[in-house]
Image (tube, rainbow, N blue to C red; front, side):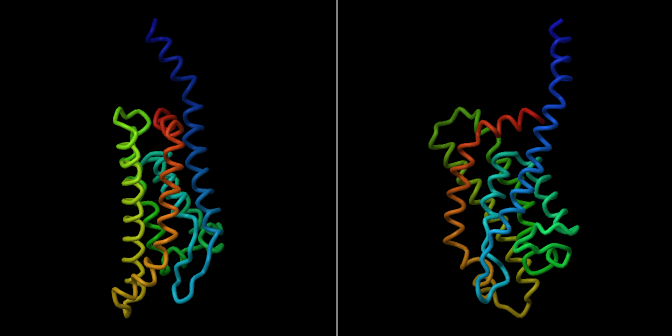
Amino acid sequence: MMYARTTEDTIVMAPLAAWIRVSGMFGFAIATALSAQIAILLPHTPVPVTLQTFVVLLAGATLGPRLATASMLLYVLLGSLGMHFFALGHWGLATLFGPTGGYLCGFVLAQPVVGRLTSGLARSGCGVGRKAAKLLAAMLLGNAVIFTCGLLWLAAAMPARSVGDVLALGLIPFLPGLAVKTAAAAAAGWAVRPLRRRFEESL
């Protein structure tokens, strides 16, 4: 009898769980696209300053590794197919394979890192300090993945440039803002821990 009720509950809750997953996946894809439009062009670099890293890191902490990866893949796919989703309203394969394409790839590859490191954070029995440190470490490693992909791609797109030039174009100007966005993403990730648990339970 208990098994019958459990099966019935599962059938009833399945559409709700699917809706939660889809809404989270599409929601963060759209949020990433919107954050890309808040952009500042810097002199001497093709890489703009945007709010994307904040949203991308928060996606991993909120959705978990699988849903967040799917969300970023959806974002990149829609932008590549013609939606004006990339920074400054750009779109298409020319942008994806352009100098900044590595950062877009990094958005996708960072999700398993951030998502797995923050998995179970809402239910973990460790202390608050340890949870916060784990969350911040996840954000820092996620940034490391994004910028490693971005810098390697940028170096390949500009083979005549030295390592110092690539760092000056693709990393150093962004460090102050990156620190702020990382801290903000960690704080937001802490606040949405109950939501992360809801997404984990929907899988």
